[in-house]
Length: 115
Length: 114
Image (cartoon, rainbow over all chains, first blue to last red; front, side, top):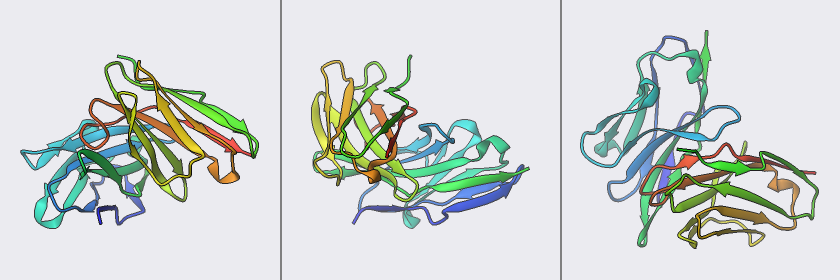
């Protein structure tokens, strides 16, 4: 069955520290991959996406993610976290469903940033 | 370009009532998706409309319905409200559909059922 796993429900890092949020998926073909961020009281905002090509993709707010086919992973990274990065992060996979694609979501990782 | 607009922002209803939520997508986007978000269940997909046709549907009871108009604006309706329907309802628009192109989300409608 197609699924997306974000193993870490909650992560706390210190401001200025590096960050890696994990995302693993189960899907038979190469999926479309997305990371979204949700600040409190807001909708979700696209951070970055991978469709094809270079497996290291750059996004907004200094985030990047690397697609690793052999590990079925699409982990999100940031070299130095800012207090404003505290939010909920969602990984999503666009998988084929008949003639359409559907989005499969992870349950999210809540990021807290200590000053 | 204006973003996705959801109205109302907050809503309080009582059990048994019905409610209609509205979503105006980004100009040019033909796909509108609806999600329910609760602390315990995360993001749950309700349905997706593309050019006025429902293209995908999640596992929600028939009390949850939606429609899309010719100008791509969308509404979702929940009838016979239950306490468990209290949630943040998010609408998202995209060019091709949620799995093939990025979603642009509104800020949601917070529904409280008492």
